[in-house]
Length: 347
Image (cartoon, rainbow, N blue to C red; front, side, top):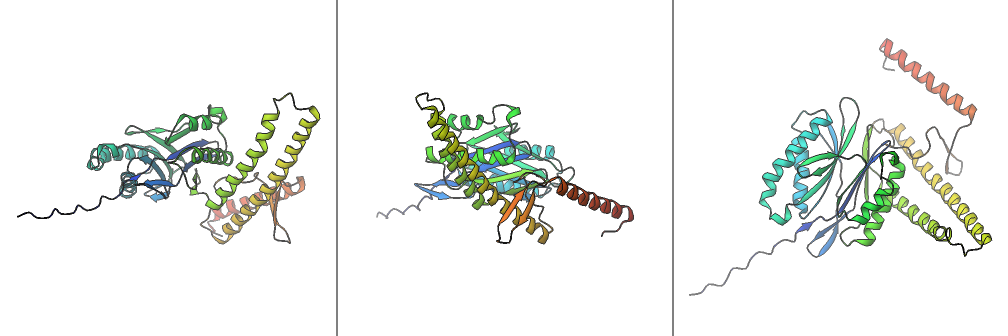
């Protein structure tokens, strides 16, 4: 007597994270970026690959690339869970802890997966919440963590993307501030989305500083990407005309003048938009004592931000008289705080 063969349960599609993750060291902090596309079987889905969390005495950001999304997620959860059980306080201790966890994870949990799915690489960043405020960024090299000196790309790291990054990060003297690094990173990810089927979706941008660690507003990132596209289109036309000696001098000067007027107008418009964002941050800081303000400078330090009658916001550099008044106010506040410390008066 023959029995009918039992139907095999369907095999769930594999989650594959072949991605692009970038980390940049800046003059005033660091920037981490990741795309938001993941391959599940024959489909592309949107996921959050970079979500900073607080565990133990650290704020941590981890993003990984590999042939198994589940395996990468398990390692991130392992770090978060185990870090809460260890009284670590220094970044050196955090690095040693993560190296030990990565080695243990590779020897045990990863071995339950097929060999082809075990390959994985990570970009990690941690900010200490105790002691002197500081942060560090690492990239995995084998089963060890290597500090990121300038920039690091993880995942779909082909030569084209390294070349774009190295245009701005080819030597220590060319490290940029956070505000400019974000634009470099967004330009890099725009190129990656246009040239790779495995990289896509909105770009997640995390900013870390010794005084803060957080994700930049996705709406603001989209606006920055639009700025880059506009400036690129303005610049390309002039770029090809500069070495072209067949262009008459008068025509070339017209192009230069038009370019200058366009970028000046665009910059002023963008500056107004940014000033409005800074004003919102100032209001939030007054209403929420736990909010420490923006992690990086969006407008020149010392700028005066003013709310106009029509609801618009402008930012400008103060004149000499205003600077003197602001300096006097700061000195008065500092003197009052110093006096409170002496008397023990919390007010």
